[in-house]
Amino acid sequence: MSNKIQKSVLAGIIGTVVMTAVMMISQMMGMPKMSPPEMVSGMMGMPIFVGWMMHFVIGIVFALIYTFFVASKIKADNHYLKGALFGIVAFVVAQIMMKVMGAMMGMPAMEGPKLLLAIGSLMGHIIFGMAVAKVVGNAFCTGKSDTK
Image (cartoon, rainbow, N blue to C red; front, top):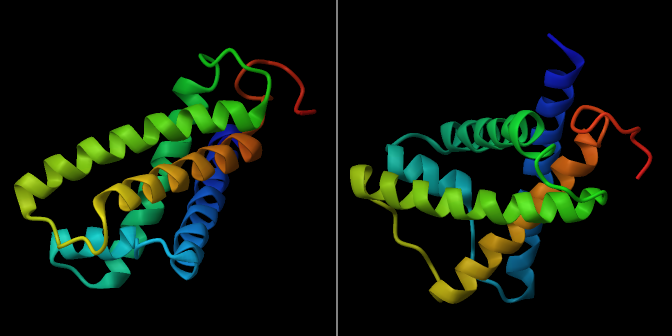
């Protein structure tokens, strides 16, 4: 396995952990409950453990997409800006996929105001993108050294 793939997998795991922690902590600050693993497991009719596994697999896939297809296309030198832009794209893709999957499999009921859920999800995906971009760095994406 190449160093590029290993770093991407690590970035996906770290990004998913950070995003999930922020989503869990945000509940203590008045945001509605957001649990992607529960949503995924509920849609599939599977145990929560499967939802957690799928949540991390999706995070790893998004990190691989960032490394191999997106990072070199974003013409910014700052990791956090690149990651935030990628996080917005990941949010949009996630929303589309949730609508498609929800139409095919049925969607569990969401708790709380939809606007706050959308804002919380967007924030979570931006934080995910920033964490992924920081872990991956520039070394694999633009040929620059990983100094920023």
